[in-house]
Image 1 (cartoon, rainbow, N blue to C red):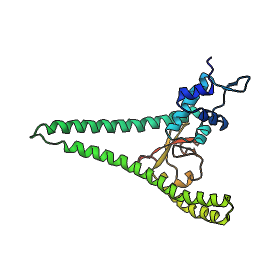
Image 2 (spheres, one colour):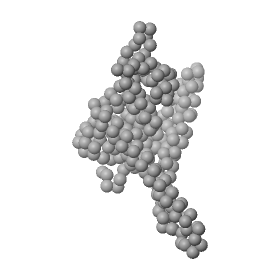
Image 3 (cartoon, rainbow, N blue to C red):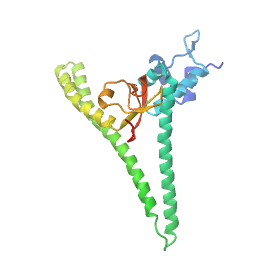
Length: 243
């Protein structure tokens, strides 16, 4: 069995040595062995795990969520669902780009013929699809902007408190941001559904049941309304027929 140092692991996965060390201190990836001098040594299994962690980080999962999923009862099922959702997302983007290319090629061919008609229907179809994609991205950007707007003052008041200022402005500010945060969460979860890792059922819980649960916009700890299993459920876009 191969053994890898921290530097070798970092090089093979395209991350820094400090990142590998940080994952150890966070309890996400411990070394399988130590040298007599106390240097970390990793196995092929550790290397595969680090590659998985890097992939999950790349699709937007937080380190705490990754750790929680890996320590859950059904980590493989949850991870498979997360990757399936990512495949669907990337596949949709590829299909969109391919259709754009087809329309562009068709328009170019028609432009060479002064008497040919421009494929208006194709253009309208691709514009509709692009508009839907833009709406999803625009909604996500709005959430990020509003989250930043309500977070920056809070961090500033917290820093002021730590520096020796009064505590009450931070507390009052925190209380005032709660209604805004709840409205943003309801806005997001209104169009969200979740896939259960146990039964693969897709369900749409009430926004109030999602608020306060642990997780991120990729996965949350919920109780499936289909089978009753409690665990990490992967977020997806709700279809009209999902209840």
